[in-house]
Image 1 (cartoon, rainbow, N blue to C red):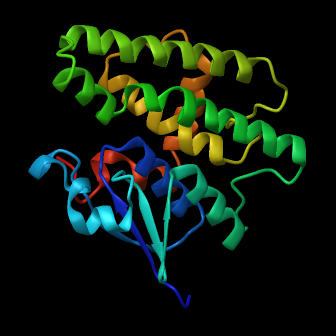
Image 2 (image 1 turned 180 degrees about the vertical axis):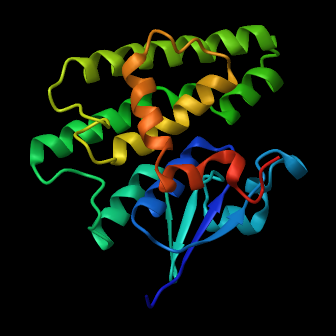
Length: 218
């Protein structure tokens, strides 16, 4: 491979976790550059990293001399430049379904309870921790209720979110379930989500991407 890959990541960032899974599923060898989101006031705000990613978020992926941001855009890029194994089905309706499931997590659950939202509630509005947790749990339940219903109501659901091959939707689901456990969300109402999670985490690509398996964990 002519151009190398470097992923700017934080071990517990679910968005970075998605990309780690995608890179692993594609079999791409990448260097990992930790960016601690809490230490030193948040290393993502350091001038060097802000120049790399003006949003001051992780992940960012360097491929050769190009830098990509936004986890779903990065996963789409991986699909374009390394088509096999695929993260999306071959048919248009299947691709739309998988993207819709991925966006349910990445656009409608995760942004409402990620670190910078919780920090804003704490620092600017002094919202008590119990209320911040209630906020996060509410939006996770709302999203998981919808995803469980979507998966249970579709013949396209297989061992994974779409058929029997892991893809983009699974890359998004597994990190969000990790977050749900951090907030002690009761996952009993979501048997399909839990079944898919078990199938995913049995695969080396998902296991290697787990937060606790990252060099910056802790």
